[in-house]
Image: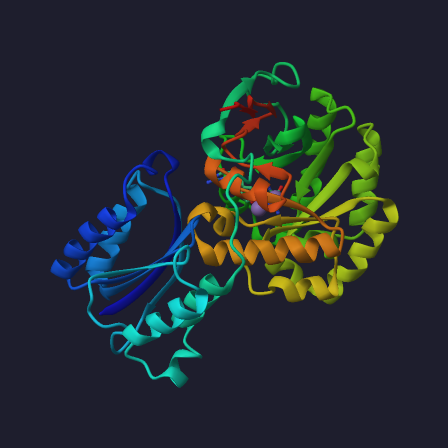
Amino acid sequence: MLTTLIYKSQLNPSCKSISLLTLVEKARKNNTALDVTGILLFNGHDFLQILEGSEEVIETLFAKIGQDKRHDSVVELMRDYGPRRRFENVGMLLFDLRIDTPKSVLSSVLRYSKLDNYLAAEDRVFKFIQTFITQPRRTSGGSQFRPERWTLAAEHNPFGDAIAGLIDNQVCQFALQPIVQPTEGKISSLEALIRSNDGGSPERFFSTLDQDKVYEVDLLTKAYAFALAEKIGIGDHKIAINLLPMSLVNVPGAVDFLMDQILAHRLQPEQVVIEVTENEMISGFNQFNSAIKQLRAAGIGLAIDDFGSGYAGLSLLTRFQPDKLKIDREIVSNIHLSGPKQAIVKSIISCCTDMEIALVAEGIEKIEEWCWLESAGIRRFQGFLFARPKLNGVGEIHWPHFHHA
Ligand code: C2E
Ligand code: MN
Ligand code: MN
């Protein structure tokens, strides 16, 4: 299938000595043999490359480019399929904005195009090209959040030794996972994740229950989470718990129960955050709304969990603005490689900034993901990169440290 792929990249600084023309000439030969057209634009800092050819060939080629040490910060911007080639089969063409004016580059790109001008104006491929050509030139230097500048160092037992093994006389256990603010070396909060008594996942635990008991058990078990927070001594850190919204709606006196347990375990209501997933929230919104009011009146915080994984998306925020919003793992995983993910997260950051909603990025596993998100303005993170959930305690926290060149 005829495939078009667009990516942005930079020349690896250690390759400055290699002539661009030599690289292009080599690529031209390769591409011609593979029946691929590559349109390469360079502005002195970034490359924009359009690749056109058969799907398998393009995919293999792009995978190679991603591994190629000469390319830095490769970000996929677009992948699309079409009935015919947009460009003549020219192997590889270089358009250098350091030499030619934007206007002349644009008209020469169009000269190699096989689309009529009026069609090209509405075509996403040409719009990417046009934007790249006309955007103000970025100067290099930039962010301190370059992955190679950071290494992780472990802090052991931040809350003292964990309680060994299981806690007796409970129907379940809790694991704690920190949410961290790495640049400040600060723990933002601890999330309590439910576990079955054999260490099984929340899903496992809930599946063993009578289905008509789920909401009640969900609510009542939170007493163990608060007890654990007291036991390990969380001080003035925050504790986040997960609840199904219906656990607050269907169980009579739910908010009063939470308040009693919070106070019984010497916590402040302001230290407690309830996390509710986006989908559950929207499905019973009207009923849940009165529970939200009670929680707010009591001083308890609310967070939207797994934001972006469901169908509500930004429209949920027109109805309700939480204190905190957790961006789903799916959107931030490999964000350093994906233009669409970057665009979506930038828009979430922009609207949460305007609404003064704190953002957390969930499921960070790679230093590259963290670096991109820090540069974009996110300050709170949860993920295996920094700390894994630990049964009845807080495990090692891996803090990033900066190295000067
Ligand atoms: P969640 O609230 O989004 O919690 C984060 C989940 O992501 C946890 O899975 C955690 O172990 C996992 N995680 C954290 N960092 C990473 C990472 O870097 N990579 C990967 N792959 N995973 C990471 P867990 O503990 O299995 O919990 C799954 C879900 O179960 C939770 O998702 C939450 O929605 C739900 N849950 C947990 N405890 C409770 C509870 O007490 N009540 C209710 N109703 N739901 C709960
Ligand atoms: Mn959660
Ligand atoms: Mn989540």
